[in-house]
Amino acid sequence: MNNLKRACLAALFAAPVLVGVKASAHHAFGAEFDPNRPLLLRGPVVKIEWTNPHAWFHIEHTNDDGTKTVWMVEAGTPNTLLRRGIHRNSVPIGTEVVVDGYQSKDLSMRANGRNMTFANGQTMFMGSSGTGAPRDGADPTEGSTAEEQKKLEAAKQAESEKEKEKE
Image (cartoon, rainbow, N blue to C red; front, side, top):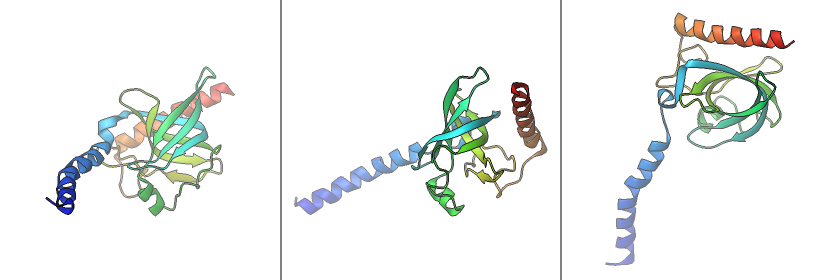
């Protein structure tokens, strides 16, 4: 058997394995995040990972007791963000932001981001939606149910009250 035939056979057998690895890395919202655990994170962006299948924004959030925790916030794919006009340098490291989203089911310091709000009030949809994601009105391509909107508003109100108590 010549080298060309060997290479073709190797590629033929390797392709399903490589495709399987790529496909298993991507997940639906409901597989990893809890739509019943909305959260708000405030703080500076300390790191950005512009990778497939999702971009990740690392936010240093100050907890109620004054300690700081770095959260990993999942956004949409880099391609989705680029189509919305967001590129890897759109949010410089150190930028103060407020992110609303949903905590991971394993209760780790990971979240799925819905909106990122900047100090000037500008809001950026983080592009992460799809199967299992709440329809909360953050994604301009979908509507939201009244119940989902109430949950989001309740979480925002609770966070606002905590901020007022600190002042």
